[in-house]
Length: 216
Image (cartoon, rainbow, N blue to C red; front, top):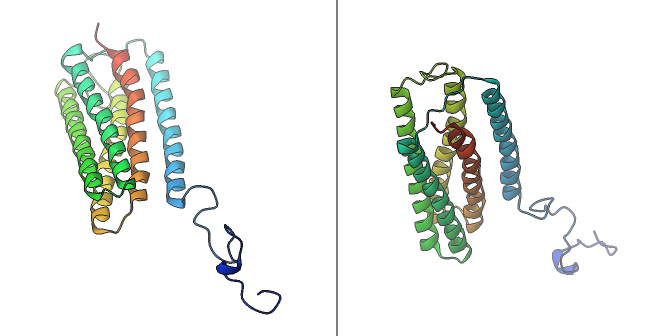
């Protein structure tokens, strides 16, 4: 109420002010949904950091740690997977810019190209798993050395693969919703943050899990 007994309205307030009781979109300078995504990314980054640290500790504490990855086909396959994932990060960036420019067709096209890249990455990863299983690698045994190699390898790559598959599903849902008008350009941008994070994590997985275990 104002001093005269009337109700305070937005129109009577200075520019940038809000009437009492009007909810803000976020208590911070960024939208609530983007804030939630950033908090998730930070917590997930801590999780991956802890797992990779534990992996490094276990590897250094195991004198007979195996080095099973030959340049061909293992490292070549990893290089291809990395190229696909980095490329998908670029296509997701283009999709976000298109969405911000109100280019719905372009945003959808590049988002679905990103999804296709994620699916291809997942298929190559699963093929790699089956190849290792065919060579005798199990969770707690392998033919080359420390039985913990299989458990740590499948745990790290499996967690990352789960994030990739989750991202593929989320981007598909958001893209279809964006096409129907249920989601906006901001939603494309928010999920692009997740996808870039998944790509960044892979940049740490490759040297620690693969390149430091190349067969000599």
